[in-house]
Length: 476
Image (cartoon, rainbow, N blue to C red; front, side, top):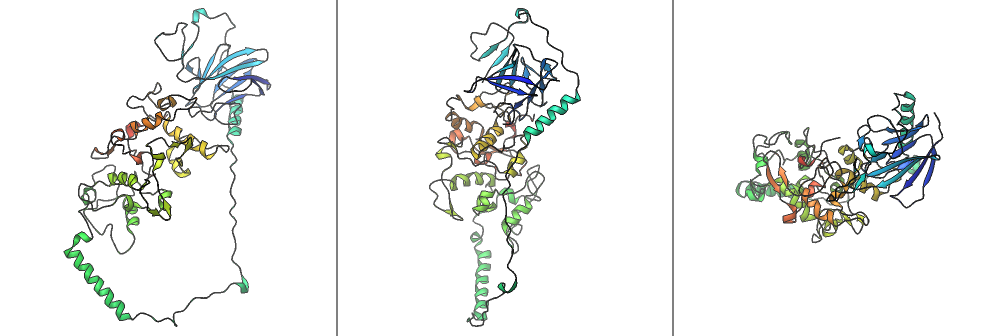
């Protein structure tokens, strides 16, 4: 095998001169370490490779779950390349040519391109088509070489290239640890109260008795001082009504399950709502702000009260410019620059992205690169959650599998259209149906302008139930 493969790359999608690459093989993918970098969420980190073997260039698929397409057909095994071939990888098209200097790859970014074996494009079809000559009208040329038989040396070669390209060096912060001073410089001292005048014990006892008597009177004769209204039906039922269950047991109209002298209510909520499909977690920003379970799911509002609906109303009640309260010294304002949906304001991402724990729970095969900034990583996360993962609904266009694509929300890319997504987010992130009862607890955001905030900002990140599972496409 010859290690001096020559590749001439012509990037029509970028403003750069043709580039000649001399390498033992051309690695194609989304990683910056690839010789041919195709930066798009639908492109795998290392998706394909090209290598010269016995004076023929062969195309190899390195990601069986996301193979490249050669002349419109998914690549099932390695294939020899010939002048005029077209390789499709994500939205990129690579036109193949062969010269004395090496293999020529002309790269173009095509949105909505359809490769058809015809020389007469349809006059009423607005989709851009890449025309391929009919089989009977192809110019005479040498026959295409047969695919290479199974070769362990080639498998080891590509495995090594992928491992080398995937190595990412992340800087590790140093955590200096100080030690306590020892010797005579360390001393112990505790203050005493022998010089302070204490309160009479009798005053403390009588004060406790009086407060206890008023408390008992209020409990028996003025119950509304403790409970403004009856419990919701969710906490008054004697049997669980939602399956799979989100609570360990039914509350059965009990007060002491939540209120007791030992332990706080937050801990009791978390211990009860801890099942195989649901764990009552609180996100880190809310923990830092002192927001817990009862801050959003307040009870004693009547039997028809729905905790899920209360949480949605709490979002918009707190997160607005009119709320002057502070939470552990933190103030709040209206999110998204006063608009609903698309979290980009003045060209900057206002969405903070998902932390490492929440991103790992998504189980999406996209990792942060060492060279990516926070802005770039937020964009990667946002588009990986939506593109080719969510089904299209309503009048949103999609790809051939009925999944969201870039053009589902963006009508143009140069300059990029950021106004249309603000109107399209409400198409999916609107209603929410209560599990078990099929009751609509969040109405259409396009009609009421009240969004389903929790459909984007997931509070309980370990909740295995999706707010609208019918939107999710099949896992590839």
